[in-house]
Length: 437
Ligand code: SF4
Image 1: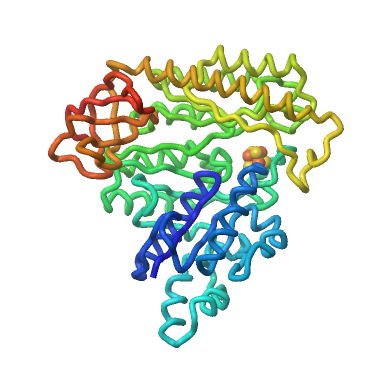
Image 2: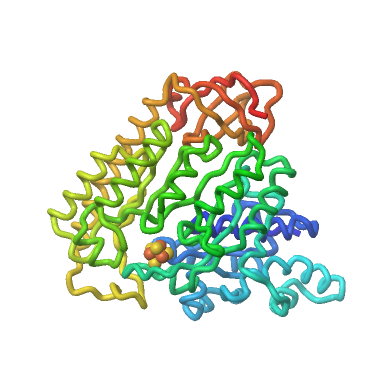
């Protein structure tokens, strides 16, 4: 029986989906992509933007025509009624029950043996206790690197966001369990783990903070294991965290949601840091890593954003030479303080600003790629196509290896040198010198 786990949104959702897919694979189900017809669909939704919600609705409608469809995630949590109306064979799974999906595969198998239909089986699950930290995948069907969820929820209340409304208060998985799970991923042969959470820098277990967690992980993991952080909110990046990032096993790739280069706008939307503080963090990251890949999120057209505020954002981006930008035009989210702002920016202005920043982002990315030519780096091999290996470097560039080593296998960590940018493809070439063991 085919099962498709379709994911929208952040890396935490991807991590949770992988664990759900893994639980089905272990029970003998075939895990397929959305392009293959499936008997059961699990849609893990996102509520960050209205675009993500639109896409969720479109895919849910399509999936409902093909099979039994369970819909969960942040969007399903805050708009269950709207989503329930999209199809007949649709079941909404609230966030409080989302982790129970990890037990659904076993439940379905026993129901089918007892003569129930798939629809009946899917509708009758949900009494088993499960915690938001039960997502503990041993295999990854949709990614070749391992994800490890260490945090959930958020105690901030940024005025545009409803993720914290859907996910609730910040909670953290205890240090010992994180270390134990990371060690079992290492034993399973993974050479890179990405740590994820709703607000990762809010990680806190008995005062350790994210820095303390990383210290514990690094002292237990082998010298060939690499760690990557999904994203870091600026307001909880402290000295202990910055110090531990200098360890060579921490990948030189950071993703920071900045949202605006104007202190006035940051204050307007209840973000808890200033541009000066942010600059100090960026300076430190560049001190501990050699030309790290620093990606940043920005929102254009936040309420009250004037031409002068936008100019400050653009200046910040240019002066900081980010390697990549993720630009989101502001869309008011229901149930947030900015649902109906009186100082709303015209959509045409918002979209024009997004267009300008996306163009800047493309130029900065190309510059970053070109700067890497001739530099040393490490790559995790991901997939083989037409005689070449493709992979992702420590500094988060997609690479193509035209002269692959015979010892190559998916998930392997190799060291070498970046070559020229590949013509007609968005990646950069890489020459492998050795395997990292
Ligand atoms: S830090 Fe702000 S934007 Fe991020 S999840 Fe928390 S409230 Fe939302």
